[in-house]
Image (cartoon, rainbow, N blue to C red; front, side, top):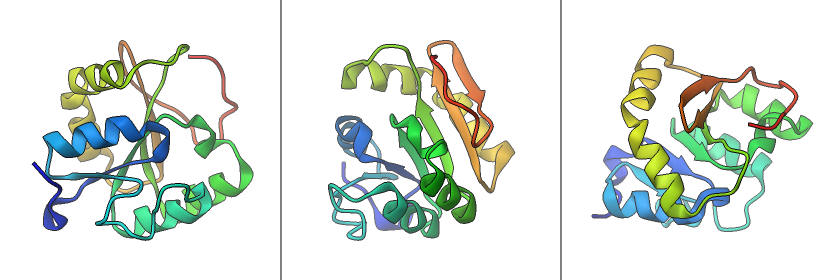
Length: 143
């Protein structure tokens, strides 16, 4: 299965590139950094550059990088763009398979959150036990 330009809903940033490629293979609504359908987000693109590009396409971000919401420049872009993010949280790094497993287990909650929250900016952590909203700009801590 390949991504369909007319069905795009999700963008997986480079911090979870393997997951992005797996999701693209399984779903028509997901692209990732370096994908041909989003040429303004090549591999290596900096957060302040991809954030407005992804938000302009009304895509929801799936990421592993928690710094998006704490670095001043990224935080400003995040807020200005109205970015919507699901962050795969955790104290330890996981394999792509582990991330995929966590995402699939919580997919109904992800869809419900999107429907209920609508426009951004908002930021949710996907923990082993479920989703948790995180205030944008909150000081990071161990999950």
